[in-house]
Length: 119
Image (cartoon, rainbow, N blue to C red; front, side, top):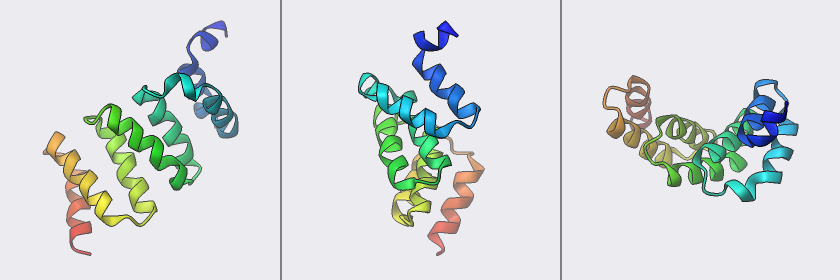
């Protein structure tokens, strides 16, 4: 158990894995100032809020994670879904295009982009 305290992101992931989202948010917020430049931490926090269907709070975390690592397809995928949840079609299209730029064979992004451009 001592290892979790030496590795706060592991503790955060464990809370998530165990479905303890409220505890994860409290813990994440308590250490956030130490991880402002950590794309993985921002991704984890955004994911917690996304799971809790709080897209407005999740989006800034995904935005920051993307700013810190603009080639992470997983972040871009969740960022796309968050934009969709917020009914931000143009932003979702931009994310899809970036995913396809990074991974030209990403069938999920290709399919979603086609669908969004035909709406």
